Image 1: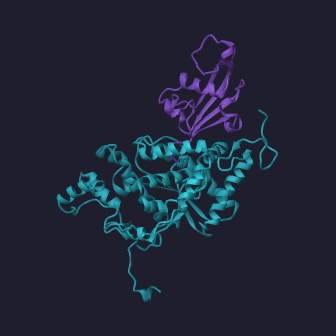
Image 2 (image 1 turned 90 degrees about the vertical axis):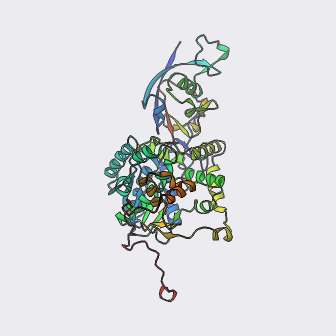
Image 3 (image 1 turned 180 degrees about the horizontal axis):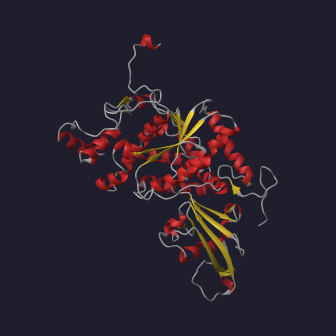
Length: 116
Length: 358
């Protein structure tokens, strides 16, 4: 199974949900299940898609998040109030969850919900 | 997806979608429009006059850190001729405020501004840690909110400033509009959207980020790599505000203009004169000289409750009656130092005969 390597960064207090570690390097599969199920081992090519940010978010919830998933995800995507940048660009310009990840991409998640 | 080009300069790659307008713009144009909009807010509302001494209420969090940076930038760019100060309140919350104050101390160096830190402990004789150990986690936000408001004014008086600016952003204001509607708090609804508030004796307070979206403030801090602190207060999030905030963020996700629309609705409310007439007049606190709508200000009431071991007396009517039944206020009770405005005149309501006043 071929994989791609990503850099994940957290800011704005979101790192507290991820073992209080701001920077992570992870490897995830190039082809993943269309329903974002992260436990699938044998992939049926009919139900496969190129890995995207939507899958990444599920992967993070299932394999990286340490506590309180509801503060990270809501309705199958990141919770409103969390900003996502893909290679320093607002993910709203990159197709949000549908952005297809490439090897070496850097994805930043920043919570805006903490006090100012 | 092909890279999109900035809608403003038509040259660089767009990095951000503005929530307010939907425009896709590059980093440099974003800095420029964000700063210019704050500048326009400041000039259109006539917030400052040349020579003003202005304290920036600094918590070390994202909003006040960006505010300090932008105020410094605009002051230099447009020659506001302001003397800028950082003013921080130390509530005495171990593991929260002590860490965020370290950020403010770095900001002091980075922005080259004088910093004043005023603590609850020196002003009231109580840290929030001590208050929570006495009263528990219920209602502690009431104490903190009342004490902070007064501490900011007192810190500003010590710095002898004319004006306090705070980092409240558009999201905060929209949230407050919603909360005031849901609570039926008409008096606050009427004034919560004001960019600048000033009573007769109070120090001017304003919110230059009134129209700045939280998303843009966070993006600004991220792109500029500003040094800020972000952790939730360890003593209870304000649950009601939390719900209002989550609701607002859901609305924003569906329609980004919702935030500015709610502020607009708040501004458009007109409070009838007969409703205004039922609101209490401002006076000065008998004990500490701070402005108050009763003979004792809220901070003195809360402090007396703490000192006499009946902290709830400042919160509920029942507990207040119980306190009163215990007898009069002891003479040796700890009180808050007498409040003086920066002019050097104590904030006492002086009644001047009309002829003389005119």
